[in-house]
Length: 208
Length: 228
Image: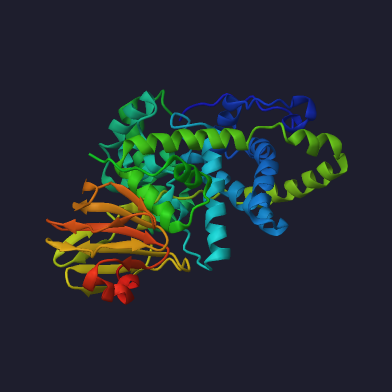
């Protein structure tokens, strides 16, 4: 698990006028997104929200000419940011590009609902957000640490691998994994426990 | 080699999300086959994103109208609470090969961009087979058009625009030969007569019927809307 340095500003810092410049602080945005992905950090999310939401609202208002729909774009976009932050990969592009893609996709699907009365949500097929997640291989290419770990994980039985990968690399909860794999929660827990026991032996005790 | 690409303005509108689904999907399919356009699209997206989220226009909002800002802030807090109330994350969908479609015994895997669009029944006239994509975009019709080896579309012009994106195989018209990935956008200034010696599959988008221009084919005009 990559450790992320927390450098959160006080609650208001991100929106005080004195802090306003035309430059976007990209490293800061990336860091917030990582904190959301790794720690489900609500304070980081609040900071991201306050940076993007007013701008998204303004852009949406110009597209829909309608307050309620603009608010819906803000809500849907930011909710996607919260739920998909683990898919953000700063080696593939800026945080602004990632959030823009989500906003544009949400807007596109909503406009299609209004204009063609179709709820087919085609945007993610037209502009895939998580291209790199299409193959498992690419999920793990980022950190050398992960790569070593991956080699060891692959020595586990297939059913334990699934659980370990979901839990550690995709940061799914045990409950989510149980649902995703269509298994009883108890089974997920015991597979994870078995797998961790084996990993500890193979990696040595300094990894925990 | 791909020689025909979407114009810059089209790419821009694509990135902005301003094109109908039919054309957006066409550009996405082309970009998947054309690294050059893919790269342009990434760059454009990055620029548009940067410009969209620059902070300058916020000065007015925050500084001039503090009451408004306060109200907005309160609203935001409740939305933040609502969103973060659940820790669920979007599970990763691993996409296998998309669905495929069969024309005259040949099977084609559908491009990613259109794999979830409902297809109508395949209709045939001679060496042409057509399956309509059910996009419900009014006068804009989107289809998969298959031409059997040796088949052709009679010489025609277009009352509106006509996009032909070659997905597989090849065809030729007065302008030369086209290969898979070519993105051919024509309007009523153009007149052409595509012939496919070895057969091909195209993704087509047109906003009006074809208009056949030559001899006996003029009799075909009522079916112009059938083909595209």
